[in-house]
Amino acid sequence: MPDILTKRNDAQQQFISDYGEWINSEKDITSPDVASKEIVYGVFNDSRCVVFVPRWNAYACVHFLEAVHMAGTWRELNMMLSKSGYEWVLDYMGVPESPDEGFEPEFIDDGDFPFFPPERMWEWMPQDIFNRHVRFGDSFLNGMMPELPPEAMIEVVAGLEARGYQCVRDDKLVQAACDYCG
Image 1 (cartoon, rainbow, N blue to C red):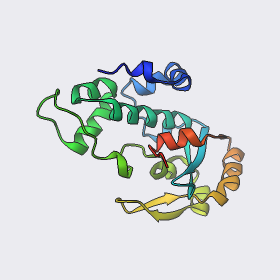
Image 2: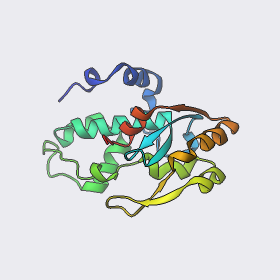
Image 3: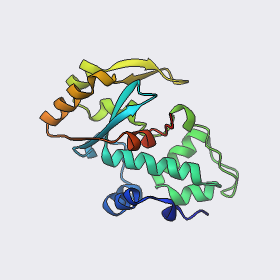
Image 4: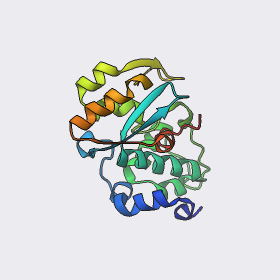
């Protein structure tokens, strides 16, 4: 099995030490009631839209996606993910015949994975801000996806900060959390 910790950069290592309980616990990281007030935002989808996501949620997405891309077998995937993350994959793909069967993710390329940031903004973002700025665009395979246009970025940041959120632009983290290489 690949040594997942040796492949992380310093920022990811810091996240593991600060927020490791989210990755290695059975907490429901998709629940909006656990969202922190620290928000990262950045451009996504060839700069056609902006995504806002709680920082811990962005790192949880990166961890999930890293595990899915690195696991060679179902056993390795099970060792890398929390119980709830592994169960999500089982529900989506079905139970393998053997834990040593090769693992090939079938869902990543079109944004199908738990807590996909663009689809989850409505859960934590104040509804008046979300409703004022969101538009819906077609995703590759999954129908309509909420999008915030880049021209709304400054106003959305101001609205969130007025409500006590701390907003930091981090295009690279947002794109990694959305598994997007543009």
